[in-house]
Length: 209
Image (cartoon, rainbow, N blue to C red; front, side):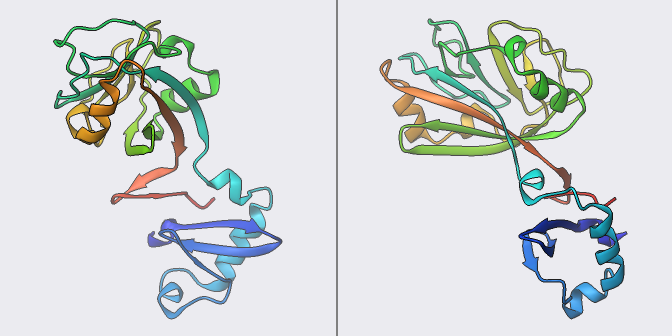
């Protein structure tokens, strides 16, 4: 049903309905009336009184700091990686950060559960004043046991190093300005992992009950 694109929650004691990210009050527009009637939306909201705006927003699962390195190239077309190792050669063209605070094995339990349940994640790389974001997907096939590496893949290939599959971007997509900054051994960056709702037609939407 097309109504599944609505997300419904309680905000400041008022019922708010959102359609693909745009807020409307409980007085429905003509377009919304064609999808779900007002009474059904209100009933569904009442059934989810415990849902809050913050619980429906993307939640930060991990912040993983890492360092730059002079041999960082960031040219790989299918993967992006950070590693706890402090030295890499120029053959490691997927790596955009070294000296990372953790590998897959040390991710928080909540993060592992979110990924292994097949959920989507928002992935953000920060370096200095720059930020670059994309998305990836978890899977039950991820064992997340590698101690040293975190790999983000465009493909469905899962290994102990893999954190996310079907990623929308790889190392080659990271802006060259950011790669240039990360080629400075004195630079530092951060990988931020956020929980995302279900993906549908290139939009991230929450299911109604």
